[in-house]
Image (cartoon, rainbow, N blue to C red; front, side, top):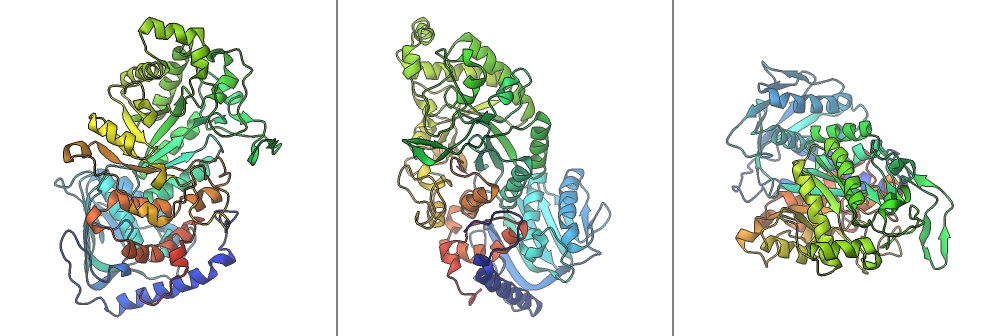
Length: 573
């Protein structure tokens, strides 16, 4: 079920679905050209037309009214940009649409039929979009709102607009609509673990492209692990000379007896590459959050700098998965090392957050370490959990001095939460509830709903995936998640910044495999975090997704065909 090249032609398993969708989209164009949409009217800010599936926008806008008529973009179309802050956004979409449309839409300050207007009354990321006989008018309060308006416009155009090849025979028809839209949550994230398996810059950018098209705005880049260190650090070159490479990888789950594949694996990103990715993401309104895992998940660090451990070693970059006992020793040498690393990381990532992990930290080596025990005695710490809290608080103070905020997995609650920390709640929502009730910001990413490395169908027919909790997470389950738990009061709920889907790559070794696991589950998440809760409807979502999949095809995304869509006939679309 996995295509082996994410830019390859469609495999035979897609042929029936593709034929159905082509028929549907042909009917879609015919409906607009013959004004079948006449007589439709809006229902206000909390509704959409009964025929809204004919305008398959995902995530669903907060308010959309479809009216009679259509407008066609042509070679003479142009962006009309008066405000300088919108110019870069218009240029970006002009460049993306040049090849499929056969010409570059001009970006002008005097006239044009795609008009971008500054509207100071709108919040960040919010927008208004109108298509009528005069063309397209976009209102936004900032560049991110203009960007999201154009991503919506892109979904309203034929799917050829998302392709890398010319489409000279395509009519670029837009329905007459009026849309007012804004996100439900400010944090809308998707994660990628490059520590277990390394993915090159080209794929990371491709991944960001898809994130941005569905109005997700955070890319959580998990850069370090026991199995590999992926970011260049000038002060400590052995992190990439040694820590970025492992001798082999365990074969699937063969730990007893251990069986390795005998194939060295590794890679890392230079600082120049990281700056390039960060800028690429920023142009698409995506903030990149790096994760530097400490004090656990540091096998690659200790292989490079064994003096930072609690024992003499030997250490090696791990070739197996799971929780490892090797962790950083809480010595002053360790903090000097970490402060220097984080200084360099902070310079690379201009966003407000740095994630430090701090999950799955076994304390056996601290229990046996004279250094750790002396710190506990000196600082009056009751136990090793308190020692971890002390460790995290020191790191947070340094990050705050760099004008950065700390994010950690919900284990940072154990032993006492650092004063300004944001909690990423993965072991269910309990940690998030506790943190929000304490007045701390929270990002929800519970395994039961948002771990996209878990099976999404019958393990007998799906590629190898995570199954440590015997969970299956199909698309419907993702869509059913609500980031605001019932246990929180309205005052506490404001601390829930949003939610994030996670893609851990123990068993995910290729770009095609990543895409198969992430999409379209991440698209379901995009509607969870963008669309008002009262508007979410699973049947309606599937109707829009079925047509929207053609855009993923044109993007070259190796998505999994949802079971429900795979069996849908085109009648009624």
